[in-house]
Image (cartoon, rainbow, N blue to C red; front, side, top):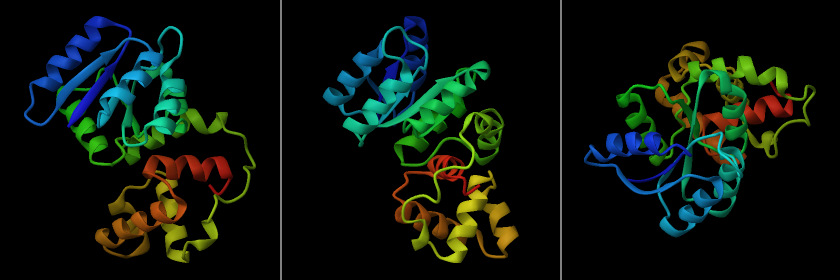
Length: 214
């Protein structure tokens, strides 16, 4: 799995590079110190994952993420952030990033996150989603714009799952709440994503809160 590192601090890039290159299945194919460079290199190198810093001079990580997702959808973005920049992390998720991770995350957590994003999963755990929402939801316009497009195509059970995911419940918690198996929940989540043309659980959360469904 190929990775592009984006951070304006060379020492940070080197540290991340050493960490990722020490594995058998991850390889750093390039580094960028600005958002513009990140967009350019993504187009040229087509990495599986772009590990993106948020605050950089010029084009920041949020705008770079927005452009990468629009221009190079096969490359997925993992936002790096700190506790005091949660609002930027959420902005990155709204721009199309597949998740976020703290820069202080342990090595194992970072490697697992990169692998998860490369595999098409969201790296924001449901419990972490709850923490982000505590910061982000008050900043979202209330009242929403109505249900997401094609929301009426969901079955009643799929709508229940949609709402549960948006509230930060894990698959086991949803299974217990709806009295179904965890595999059934996973199936419903997959159908919700497909019908609403969303990439992952993070986008379910954003769609639900921005539209006012939750």
